[in-house]
Amino acid sequence: MLLTVKTKLHPTKDQHLKLLRTMERFNEACNYVSEFAWRNKVFDKVTIQKNLYYDIRSQFGLSAQMTVRLVGKVSESYLADRSCYHEFKPHGAIIYDQRILTIKTLDACSILTLEGREKISMSFGRSQPLDLKRVRGQADLVLIKNQFYLLIVVDVPEEPQIQPKEIIGVDLGIVNIATTSTGEIFSGKKCTESREKYTRIKGIFQSVGTWNAKKHLKKISKKERRFKNDTNHCISKQIVAEAKDTQSGIALEDLTGIRDRVPGYKALTSAIGKWAFYEIAMYIRYKAHMVGIPVYLVDPQYTSQQCSHCGYTSKENRKTQSDFFCIDCGHAENADINAAKNIASRADVNQPIALRPEPKRSGRWKGKPTTLVVGS
Ligand SMILES: [Zn+2]
Figure 1: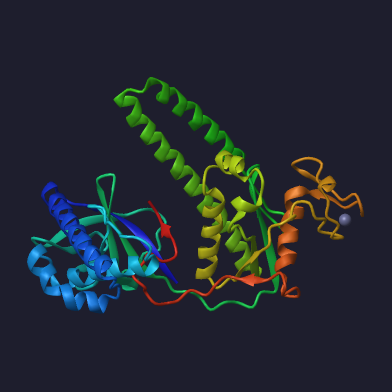
Figure 2 (figure 1 turned 90 degrees about the horizontal axis):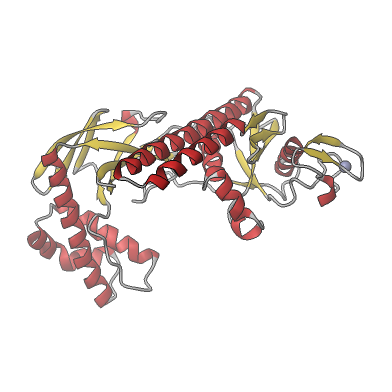
């Protein structure tokens, strides 16, 4: 499984300038190529390269490999969308490969700039599955808020997928962040408390509005983000561990396009914090992948209104947020556990119609950030 690991670079002032100049030149050249491509309606990289290779090298002073990479970047962007001219921002990503970027230790890399190679120190965020032997040569150099990062592609070994004996359904929510069909409830109480606390503090700083207050605000937002991230990591880890111990597969609701389907979803996401659902689902999926636990995505409709005992579906079944009571068969249960059971049964191997296994990922690097970015 290919993961993209985000690494912070710590260049000296001089190195920072060198990287910046290289990045600007790289994107300047991208625009030069883009103009040619758009004007002549030529989008495949071989033809572009044939026509422009020497021009680019002499006009922009870029290395052979960087030239190849930038032609690839422009070509790929047009292959994705040919409806208009593409302009590249001065601080767009530079795509590096093993010929122009070397990572031999965890704390530094050797990276090509306009003025030759530079050895630049770097650091990884927490909980990152980085094994140097697994680092592919490919990486994107990006500039975020005047800070350079490398998005490094890492090939993480996956264990062969097990043949699950059971399915654990996982219901994601706000009051309870995650609930499993086996009765495990991960409460969102702490998250809600912390969110309220941070919102309060942020409100105070926002109303002050001074430079210093803004700095504090930034710090607090970062802290809050880290707390959410840690919580999601922790919960997903426990769910995957349970699945592994019991040789079970995991079923999640397929949340693609949920915004269009579920009324009130917008209000929901702003309450829980954007992407929180996606983040925890993503963590579960990648942690499961690494240990060979299959993950199934199921139709999320009416999972909270359906009775997990008899199948009767009605709004009336769910009187309150926490209680489920089937008006048909009288089955009573915690509402989230009931929903998680529905999710599990929808993924049950005996009901293949409801089963939608995750799309298989290609093991080959295709020049784009792959599955997900972990760490900060
Ligand atoms: Zn029932």
